[in-house]
Image (cartoon, rainbow, N blue to C red; front, side, top):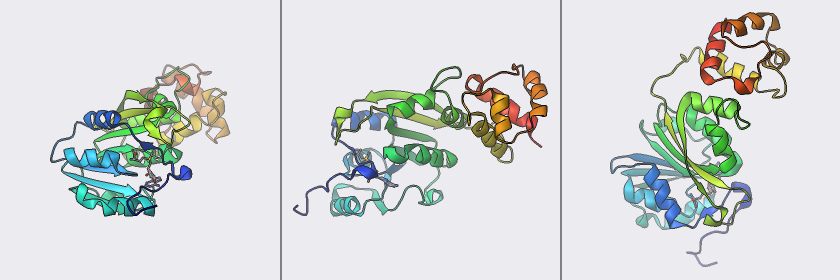
Length: 265
Ligand code: SAM
C-alpha cells in the first residue's frame, strides 16, 4: 500500500464507507448548516462527508477511533480547512468540551449506533440538531408511534428528548463494503422545553425500561417482575384512564410521563 492509499475497511469497527456523493449532498442539506455553525462528526472514516461538511460549516470536529484513518485524514489536513481531528472513542470522549449549539452530522458506526444515540441525546442541551445515518430498522423504531410493532424503549426515550423525522432511506449500494442492512438518515431536533425536571427524569427512565422489559406481558405484570409494587398500579392506571390489562406498547409518551409523576415517591 502506498502512503496515500486509504486503509482497508475493518468490519468490527462498522466501517462501511459512503461512496455516493449524491447521498453526501443530501445529508449535508438535511443539516441546514450555515457558515458559522460548529459541527461534530463521529467516525469521519476516509473523509467523504468530512470534506463536504468543511465546505459548508464554520468549524468541524471529527472524532475517529481508528488510528489508521486518523493518520490518513491528518495527512490530508490541508484539504480540510476548519477541521479538528480527534483520535478517540466517541463513547467516552468528553462531549461537554464541545461548544453549545454544535450540530451533529454523522454516518454512525452501526455496531454502537443505539448507545451512541442515547449518549448524544443525554447531551442534547449542547446539540440542538442531529442528522444521523443509521440502520433503517433503528430509524423506524426512532419514529414509531404507540400501537405499532416498532414502538418500544428507544421510541419513547428518543421522542421524549427530540422531535424526530426519518428524512430518506439509503441503499446498501451507496457504501463500500456494502452493509448487510438497509440504512436511513434521521433528523433529530432536541426539544426546547423539558417536560420533566432533572430530578423527575430518572424515575421516568426507570419506568419506561421496566415497562418494556417483558414485552409480551401486561404493563402491571412487567412492572411487577421489575420490582414495582403491584398494589399501587390498578389505581394509578385508572386515574390515567388506562385499562388494568394495558400493555406498554400502546402507552403514549405523555401517558408515561403522567404515570411516572404519579408513582414518584
Ligand atoms: N463518515 C465515513 C463515511 O461516511 O464514509 C465513515 C462512516 S463508517 C459507517 C463509521 C466510522 O466510525 C468508521 O470510520 C469507524 O472507524 C468509526 N468508528 C467506529 N467506532 C467508533 C467509535 N467508538 N468512536 C469514533 N469513531 C468510531
